[in-house]
Length: 139
Image (cartoon, rainbow, N blue to C red; front, side):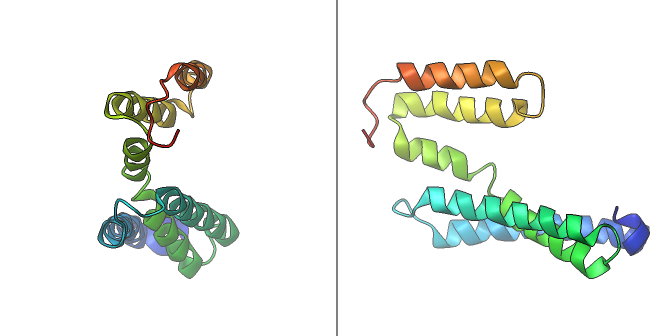
């Protein structure tokens, strides 16, 4: 998708720009956010950036080099927080004992979602939700 519009070297640089954008997005959140921040909103904004990036890439359809780069950078800005923000939310919402299980489930679901393992992951997540104690700070 990138190489025909940007050339091989340009495609490599654009993919690298996505990685740089991921680091920039992660640093920006780390610099601005605190324990009292609305981490769900931060996660939502990160997902919106990823979705917008995907949308721009679809609109570009391999034809517009500028749109391809914008799409990659938007995607990168959001994806930098995809790994770090969910565990923060879990640590804020669950007791210390339950947070480790919640983070493990987050990782299992996020890695298993595109595979046939999705039903067992969802069942595991649902059972965790039903069986967790009411020691969470939010309840």
